[in-house]
Length: 288
Ligand SMILES: *[C@@H]1O[C@H](CO)[C@@H](O)[C@H](O)[C@H]1NC(C)=O
Ligand SMILES: *[C@@H]1O[C@H](CO)[C@@H](O)[C@H](O)[C@H]1NC(C)=O
Ligand SMILES: *[C@@H]1O[C@H](CO)[C@@H](O)[C@H](O)[C@H]1NC(C)=O
Image (cartoon, rainbow, N blue to C red):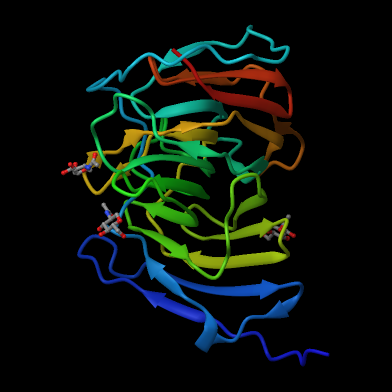
C-alpha cells in the first residue's frame, strides 16, 4: 500500500518588469496520492509562450486539407475568421462577469500536415477566459501536440498560461492521443484564479495563481489553436476532431450560466472549422 505524503506545493515566482508579482503554487496528485515535490517536474514552457490572444492578421492560410466527415451540427452561431483560434467564444458583460469556465475534451491524434514548411507543427486544445474582446490578458489551460519534423515523433503535453506571462508545463502528467481531460478555471477575482486539470489516467494538476494580469472576465473560450512558439506561429498540425463537452461558464451573479448556443465560432481559413453541436458541445476539426 502506498503511504500518503503531505501535499507539497511548488512555488513559482516570475520576475518580469510588468508583472513582477505574478505568483502561483501548484500540486500534482495521482489517484488521489500527492506526488512528492522531488518527483514533480514543473517547468516554463519553452520558448516561454504558447497560447496567444487571438490574432486578427492572416499571415498564412496553409494548404488545403481534405474535408472531414462531420456529425450533425447547428450552424446558427455567428462565425468569424481568425489566424490562430478555432472554436467557440461566448461573451458576457462587465456587469455580470465570468466566474468559472469548464470543458472536457479528448486530446487529439496529431500528424504532420503535408506541405507545411513551418516547424514545429503543433495544435493546442484549451479552455480559457478572455483574449478575444479583452486583449490585455488571457488565462488558459489545455494540451498541445508538437511534432518533430526530423523524427516524426509527436510530443504531447499539458500546459497553462496567464498571458502575458509565459506558459508552464508539468511533465509528470502523461498525455497520449485520445486521453480525456477535464479542466476547470475558477476565478476568485480579476487577478486570481485556480486551475484544475484532471486526466483519465488519474492525474490531477492544481494551480493556484494570483497577481495575474487583470482579466475583464467577459470572454469564455473553448479553442483549438494553431499556437505560437515564441513569436512565431507554428505550422498547424493535422489533428483528429476535438469535441469539447460539458462546456459551460458560470457567472459572478450566480443566477445564470453561459453555454455554446449563440457563441461566436472562430474558423481558421484553410486550417480548421468549428461549430456548435448543442449548448454544451462543439467541435473543431481540420478543414479546407
Ligand atoms: C528532433 O529530434 C532530433 C532527434 O532526437 C533532435 O536532434 C532534434 O533537435 C529535434 N528537433 C527539434 C526541433 O526539436
Ligand atoms: C525541419 O525544420 C527545420 C527548421 O525549419 C529545417 O531546417 C529542417 O530542414 C526540417 N527538416 C525536415 C526533415 O523537414
Ligand atoms: C470556485 O471558487 C469558489 C471560491 O471563489 C469556491 O467556493 C467554489 O467551490 C469553486 N468551484 C469549483 C467548481 O471549484
